[in-house]
Image 1 (cartoon, one colour):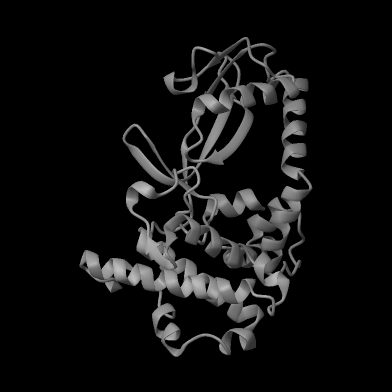
Image 2 (cartoon, helix red, strand yellow):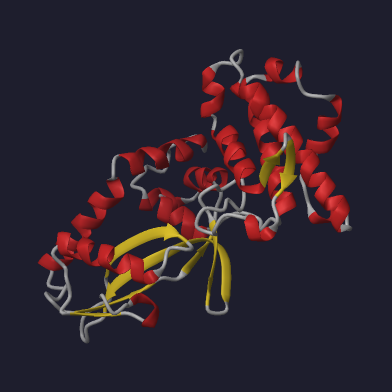
Length: 293
């Protein structure tokens, strides 16, 4: 189901509608023509359960076993590894947009789980400041004005964190993902000098491996490889490439974008050894190897 949804580029709601109304989807999923389908929210609940149960790893191991039995996987053959970039499903944000959207997401999250608690504390001006989405065309053009807005947002976020980490709110407020992202982004983007919150200079920011680029995907990272720049991840793929044999994926590793190819090579080879599909020769580009390798 997930593969079909991804291949068709459908949202959860659109995929659920396709299962209800398309004969080819019902046939592929082994459902009867009169099957009513399922609610779209089932998909978002299913994916974490599948990952937690390592269903993907079990399916992948079974797949390699079947290929080996069918004689499609050559023992100690030749394989190749590369790491194409994977774009995160987010809009690219500049620093000011990022802190504004982080504050807005935290407020929206608290408004869902604790509306009365939030309503009793939020100043009136916050509704105008954090109601609309932060976008470049709405931000001040001048640098002093942008710094002033950033520090205003920073002070608001710090006040919100003080309220959350005080003794009166329920402790589970701190476990909300939006609140934790807010805390991390504020550590990365601001610092306090003599009790005054300041906006960090560009040369004082954390490295890209740690820098949160968007509150809507806190694990996505910025990276650059040669002339390619992107925010997201890397998919380290290894496949067989023997003549007269089909090309089969033997390993898949997904990492944040800044993780280098040569750091992943020992991990990839260890995974191939565990599955008993180590090649006699593994082809990689110059970015994957070091003298130690």
